[in-house]
Image 1: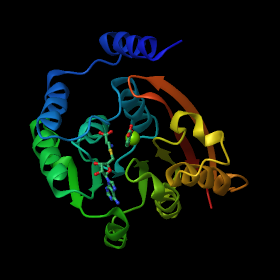
Image 2 (image 1 turned 90 degrees about the vertical axis):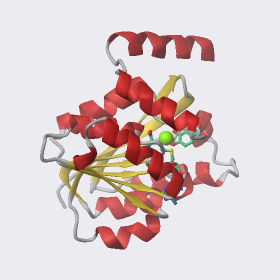
Image 3 (image 1 turned 60 degrees about the horizontal axis):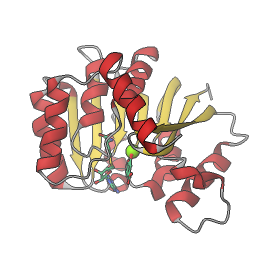
Image 4 (image 1 turned 90 degrees about the horizontal axis):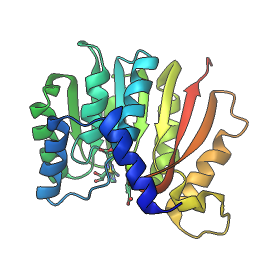
Length: 221
Ligand code: SAH
Ligand code: DHB
Ligand code: MG
């Protein structure tokens, strides 16, 4: 199996059961035109996020890492009318692009973008939770810090999902010096034996290569 096959399968799934509408395609184009990196979730991954939002009956979502708003639009669309999503983005320019695309998608009233490094935004979120679903997809070295914070602010039965934990398989390599990889290993070690969550990691291949999601269900305290 090779990358070409992985991409072809994503394309087929995208043409059949996880299709992007014109609004989402325009959001991707707008991001590209503004010079943002094309690292948004793939359509099949985005559909998984939507299914998770619906499965937990989420009304309050927190996202770390907005980029051009692609995953935010998808999750916001899966929310009920009175649902709310807060998304944290370090770069003001990215947040502007996202704001435009999110508004164009018709979910602007459900989505709030907070600009600045996520760690600095966290104290301001003290009066917002608890959340039903937290999607961690910002700077990967901080994924364990964001997870640790989210754990105290996600309701029992809620989900914490972290993107990019497998990193071409380097997750399994305890000698890899990359700080982002070490952080994902630390996250797994941190959750091992932690009775507050029941978690797993699913490896993924597709247009974005080889990576994976960690999905954690929050248990009652
Ligand atoms: N969730 C998006 C993709 C996010 S890419 C989607 O699937 O559509 C990662 C994003 O995290 C980038 O936009 C990057 O600017 C942002 N980011 C990086 N470091 C950050 C930080 N410390 N705080 C908040 N956002 C950060
Ligand atoms: C990359 C992919 C991501 O999903 C992300 O959130 C950040 C970076 C990448 O492939 O570089
Ligand atoms: Mg990601």
